[in-house]
Amino acid sequence: MPVLQCPIDGCNWKSQDLDEAFAAALTTALQIHDRTVHPPLAQPSTHKLKLDPPSIATGCDPDQWSAFTRQWKMYKTGMAITDNVLPTALFYCCDTNLRTDIMRDLQGDVASMLETDLLKAIKRLAVKEESTLVQRIKLNRMTQSPGSNIRTFFGQSQRPSITVPV
Image 1 (tube, rainbow, N blue to C red):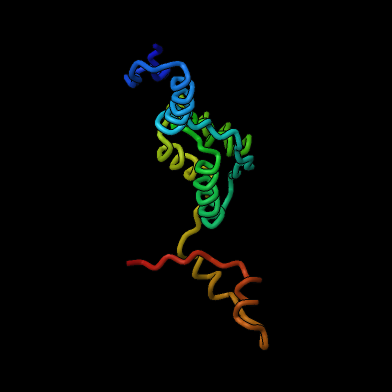
Image 2 (cartoon, helix red, strand yellow; image 1 turned 135 degrees about the vertical axis):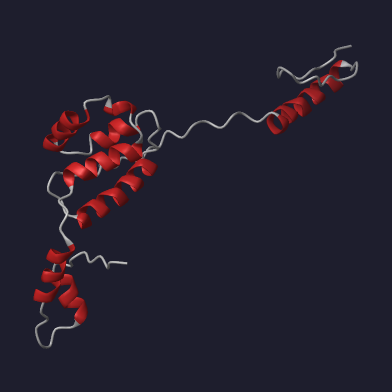
C-alpha cells in the first residue's frame, strides 16, 4: 500500500496507507494541495520604465532648480534607483561642465555622498541666485497691456520668484 507525501521541503503532510486506485485519485488532490498551499513564488516583473533623466546645467534660475528637483524625485521613483547608485545617477543628471565643477569643488568620492548633500552641492554650483531687490525691480517693470486677460499676461511674462521677508 503506497503512502503519498507532499514534495515541498518543510511540508510534513502524508497520506495514510492507500490502495493503488485511491492513491491515483489522491495524487490529483495532492497536486491541488501543492498549487493552493504552496503557490509558486511571484516572478519579478520584467517590465521596466524607460525614462529620460532630468538634466541641470550651470547658470539656471531658482525656478529651473525647483523643476529639476521635482523631476529628479519622479525619475528616481520611476526608475527604482537604489540607494547605492543614487549619487552616481544624480551626478550624471548634470551637464559636463557642472560635473567638472562638482569634481573640482568636492574633492571626494561623489558616489558615496548622501543624496541631500550632493543636491546642496549641485544647487550651490548650478543656481545663480538673484537678490530680492532684483526680483522686486522685475516685478515693478511688469506691465499688462489693455484687454489681455490675467492668464495670458501671467503665462507670457517671466514670473519672478518673490520672497517675502518674515
